Length: 195
Image 1 (cartoon, rainbow, N blue to C red):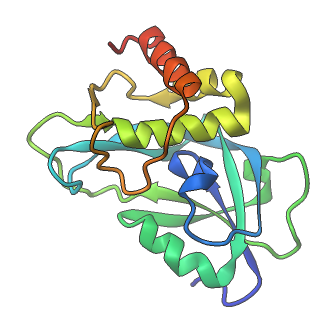
Image 2: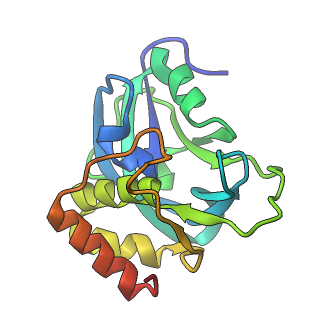
């Protein structure tokens, strides 16, 4: 049951890390680290045109991942749920995260985890470049270049191919990259084995 008033918080570990992709007037956001969860690329067969891979997380006691804790109005939670279709909202506790400051009192905290029973696509999945660019830009802004390296190191499945859609972005919240960001992300992906 979603909260009816006040504030809520949700941990973004993918495109929600990029504030430019938010569609609600959030109250605040702060870089955070989620403990006991591992981020990974997962096939998302219902994306248009090809079997895309998007990010999700799974519980893993020895893992952790960086992200952005978004503090929003509870009335906006339905819009965030709609954005995160095919994901389920999972309650967290403050001890599940490392934060630089305390949350507002009585503020429930959530993370979105992909539905486990999504059907498989007969073709192998690919990472959507327009989505990846939004994610990488968010990590660069919130966690710096070291955060970009941690993002790759802490994410399983980066061996998937990348679907280049830069000229015609498929991701509905695609972002503009600067020349510096483009070069930095290309270098990061080359280092990770992508051409």
